[in-house]
Image (cartoon, rainbow, N blue to C red):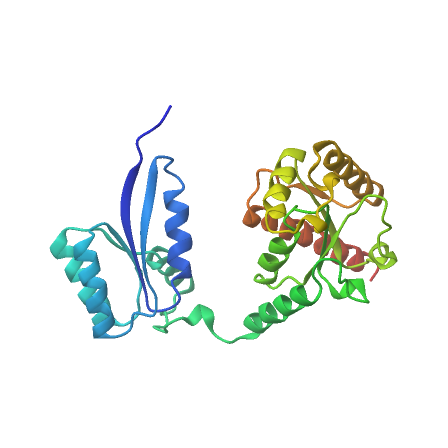
Length: 284
């Protein structure tokens, strides 16, 4: 049964990258199955000329206005226009900042894009991204424990995009395809601190993804077994058995987003580090 969808204009006004606003807006809209947001994104809004354009577009397409702004003059103009048009105008960070300010009893710093400062965390994320790019699709590091996470799985289980997403969270990740009948590199079995995680999916999902990939490949590159459901099912069974034999946790990504898969991996990594720390303390 077709349901009528409701469309809403959402204006995201930021003096920084706008990523925080996009994440918050999409999380809110996802709560409403029949609502679809038409996003208007305005990053790096810091001048009168820039806010002029924003206000003009808000007037042309009224809707919900969300912002993260520091400059009081830019903020005042935005709120005044929204008040004039009768539109909701929301500072998405204000409730959180108020809680921190109350709990810590300190004043907030009016600093544009403070969360994107070039601190140690930023450089850790960049290094992790470089690591993921250098050690993609079987290019394991010589010392497997140079990685925080090693992802293994048959082709089309989202190993590479998951690696890159984890890198953006500062997690050094490498990945390795599991191929039926092909021996795994010996060093993967020597991992002490690196967490090895298997990714799997249903045969139907993998076949569908592989069929899409085939469209970009020449006929010489295609094996009939690559998109044969029975052969794919055998690959998955082989990979599951390999993970079970080695005690590697296995995550089914059939109905998971990359973000959900990454969150599950980070939870496993946290547990592993906690267990290792507890064991170390016990021997001290």
